[in-house]
Amino acid sequence: MRLLKPIDALRAALTDPARSERAVLLSLAAYALMWTLYSTIAKASQGLHPDMTEIVAWSRDLSWGYKHPPLAAAMVRLWFSVFPVAEWSYYLLAMLMPALALWIVWRLAADYLDAEKRVAGLALLMFVPFFNFHALKFNVNTVLLPTWAATTFWFLRSYRTRSALYAALAGLGAAVCMLGKYWSIFLVAGLVFAALIDRRRAAYFRSAAPWITAIVGLIALAPHLLWLSQHYAEPFAYAMYVHGAKSFADVAVGAFGYLAGSLGYVAVPVIIVLVAARPGQATIADMLWPGDDERRLAAAAFWAPLLLPAVVALASGIEITSLWSMSAWALLPVLLLSSPEVSIRALDTRRLLAAAVAIPLAMLIAAPVIAVIAQRSGPLPASAQAALLASEVERLWHQTTPLPLRFIGSAGNLADGVATYAVDRPRVLTDMPQPEASELKRSGQVIVCFAEDTACRGKAAAHAATSRRVENEIVRNFLGFPGKPQRYTIFIVPPGS
Image (cartoon, rainbow, N blue to C red; front, top):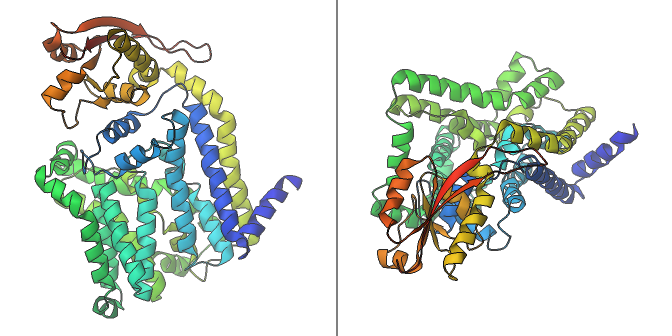
């Protein structure tokens, strides 16, 4: 068929050693751009998710830690020092995470899979929602997609080759993962477990490689560890407050849900391989736990970080969710396809590539309809109206003073959205390191509240004698469809008050 000729050309390029690297980079660039365009259109009526605006707020006050480690905030700060603060550019940053992760998987898979299986494995991961739909919401989970993949890749190379370079990269990667989210302790523990159960462990631990990895990792992590000690491990207290102290029944249900949900997210590629390869029981056993050392080490490095959270949750009383497994799938193609008994035909690869291309194209076509449906269902005012509210806040501020708006406060995440869209790029006062009282008085501030939020308005009342209070109603319409109106109370506290 004529429509499949481009797919055949793509498969030929990806399986050709002379052209494969350039072809995969171009393919992943197109993948990232299509999903970026989809999200920019489909989410146009919703505004940025609160997780995303919260990280923007953190990035205005760079620190070695917040309620999470600082990697996501540092990346956002760097990104918006180059690109404009706009929804399309934020979604582009978000999609760079899975695109980079897929490229690392491509490189990793070359150590275990032939060309046909390597292409098929890459396409299979594109059917996992973590690499597209969920990745569109940039947060501390999505930054782990490439960092976990890279650390796993470098660790496996280090274990096999005892290379000082790969050992150092593995340590650096592990530190970066921990700076992304403390959930990464399961990757570190899982890789240590994989090393310990491998039959070649004596040779590995007698070499310099594991000690180089540990030393480099600790050095890279040292500034954050110092910050933790100075702030009384606040992020851990936050994590326990939100997810800890649950009943055993709740924890058990959560652990089962974590395992079942995690497997559900990857059900499509698993089913595709089972249907295409029709493996028998012996082959399935070899897929899950291979007989040879190299593949078994990779399998251990896959299973341990995925399963350890459920064990720890049951032992510690912490509730977990399957969404947090999104970074654990870099080795899935190796697990599914590396067995010599699993064969992938050129026809199978062709079909997988066709589906991998068709899905983002279909979603791109559907994007305007999705945006209208979201508008009619009533998106959250704090997100959907943030840009309009920011414009109104800055208009009122600059009626009061020619100085830039430097600080904005509110209750909850309302200030995060306003700060994200505000041209002056103000800092947020909620859940952030507070400025000196003298600096705050010298610069002034704006406090934004939902009109019905009496607690927020009560806190703002402390500035009643020096502030200007404005009531405003905002409605965001989209393509002729009216949005939900929301009233806000805005307190303008001018400089010097």
